[in-house]
Length: 112
Length: 114
Image (cartoon, rainbow over all chains, first blue to last red; front, top):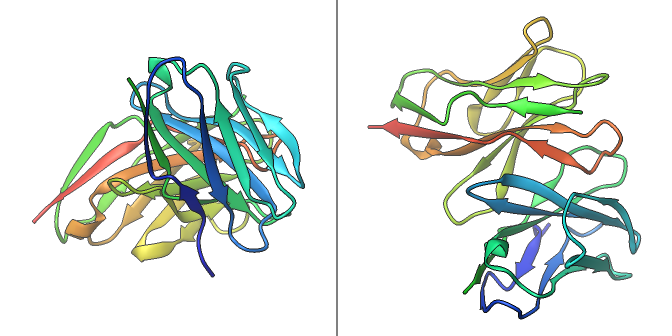
């Protein structure tokens, strides 16, 4: 089975712009979660989607949003980018009823 | 609230020696504990998990972890380290109210010298 894929792998944006990141989960996995990884804050949970509905949300401002499509693919959007949004954004998927999440390679976002 | 702590930022071990990466946890209810590894420019790879059952959990790449309820610890171990084990290791716990929200430790960088 193919693993979790994320596109693009690298992005460079400037402050004030917006960005959309994409995640394709492992086939059959309907739960998709997003995490932000920074040197200062470590790994932090952003949100989780299941069956096109946001099921959980972390402690991030409303500039961070996401959605999930009927094929379980997910996108996250960050509007009005700030320098502090520079991070590795990781997507993870899991099978409903299980506990193990499988992570993609991440999208490295740099905000200038 | 659930949390995990990794007291060591870095662990240095000679190749062939046993290694231990430490993790302690604080949870409400039964702990659901995980270890993940991250190689440079890669995402996280699942190593092993403890849900219930035997206190010694075996995982990928020859790693194992020992769950100790009295010491609230979940240390990662390997009998003989390889240079290729050098990476960033994260201990994690599942949020009590959500199976999909994982709380990660700060990470421990493991360096194996030849």
